[in-house]
Amino acid sequence: MERAEFDRFADEYEALHRANLAPSGEAPEYFAEYKVRDLERLLRTRHPAGAAVRLLDFGAGIGSSIPFLRKYLPAAQLTCVDVSVRSLAVGASRFAREAEFVAFDGARLPFGNSSLDCIFAGCVFHHVSPSAHDPLLGEFRRVLRCSGLLMIYEHNPLNPLTVRTVRACPFDNNAILLHAGTVRVELQRAGFEKLETRYRVFFPRALRWLRPLEDALGWLPLGAQYYVTATR
Picture 1: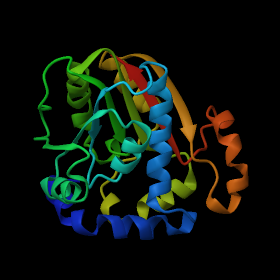
Picture 2: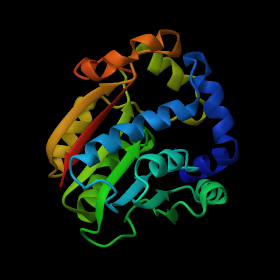
Picture 3: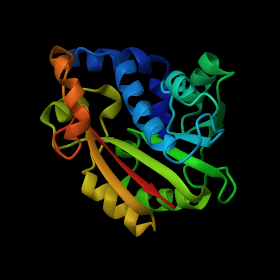
Picture 4: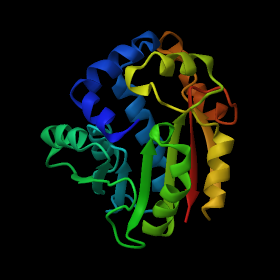
């Protein structure tokens, strides 16, 4: 999806996303909070409670993750980056005091070398052209501090319900779903280390009583989504 397409969907993104996820029985907020809880858990092992980590929400769109990033990481210095200027404007209108909003030109991140503690990319890479993955990961590695954390969360193409949901979503028309193994290979090629993969989101709302099992099922490649983490 090009920048103009993101801009076109910015004002109706939330309504479209909510309608697309309705068959799962959950609202977009459920999935946004799920991701941030995982991020907080991983960061907690690296930084003291309340540490003011410098955190980049890459591909932040209209800022859907901001309320949960503030809930779980209240002391973080939060910057939201996106190629869609219109999406950032919508996000700033909702959460102006909660984060800094910065446009990305698609080539070079507007941050100094080794200046960030953590980069979070929540279901963004399937919108990025495969030819741009290597340069973008190179930028992530440039701006992360030594031992900084990168978390890439993505839809799982091995899950048939996920594939159906993505195909039905208007703003996912040009999405290219990525296997976790592909993300791992790209991260290794970019020079990242200590890779970890976990599959997530196994049960819809109708089976929510089984959700306590999800942490133990992270090895099973059938979850609706997955994350790959790595360090610089």
